[in-house]
Length: 379
Image (cartoon, rainbow, N blue to C red; front, top):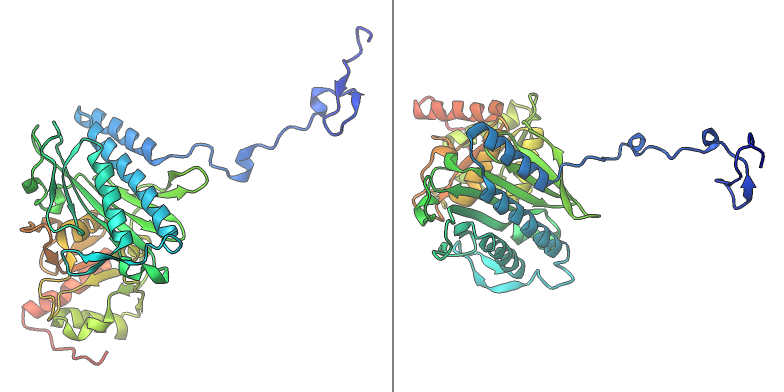
């Protein structure tokens, strides 16, 4: 080589040796951003830590224990999602041989999901009381120092339909004590407005966690290739121009009160609404959050106090819907203002966008004033 001659290098495009190339001749690798690849994903763990940091800056104290609990729920959701996806091959569709407090036959998958959530929450050493749909009584630990939290949950909502591949889900809510002491059962029997976090996990074509820690609603999708919940919707709000959708079990409509039947007749005859009903509360509420409309499960002549459980179904869902700009009511009072008297107490529920829930409440007001004609059953 002479002093002014460039050095000999290996060819970057073939196997030959000794080609002369300058750096300008070398083809640069394609930048990943051109493929819209997410190079800065916000995981569930990152969101939880960021929220804790913001809470410390705003209020001067941390919520580190809540971070442990929410991360544990994320782990339990992954385990449950795997069990749901493999339920057929693992024989988890079969009945577990027992009934829950509602008198419903438990499937092996119900029992598995319940045990998974109990174990992960117990091992955080932060939760002293756990209330589950699958257990007659609350679990009170009483042997963990500084366990100031109460977790309420339905470990597998909609599991009665899982054999036909209907989407199912987990619903959860978190309460805590107002002072530095062990949480007690009474700390869980509070109005839903006192919850500090609530959410659900939808097990479907993708696994989605919807979470609120008191301000806004955020959604995370489980990325199966590396097993992390990645934020896909931040500070979600029900659309300002919601779709005209009502969601209810029409098979029970003849048992409903006058106001509910009148509202239903209005949606069908005058409102131009379409019906969408899965029969799994998590699926129906998820659609309502994304598109708008109204979901309702009223009281009827058989279930005079409603069918859905107030503490671990209605309250967490109402918490999310209100955080997304919607309304949740039992027809007379906001769901989040109801005081549970029993861990398995039931309640009617109407939740969704402001437009539709307020329209329903107009019919309630007419009925209370004696100005509502009976709509009959012909709709």
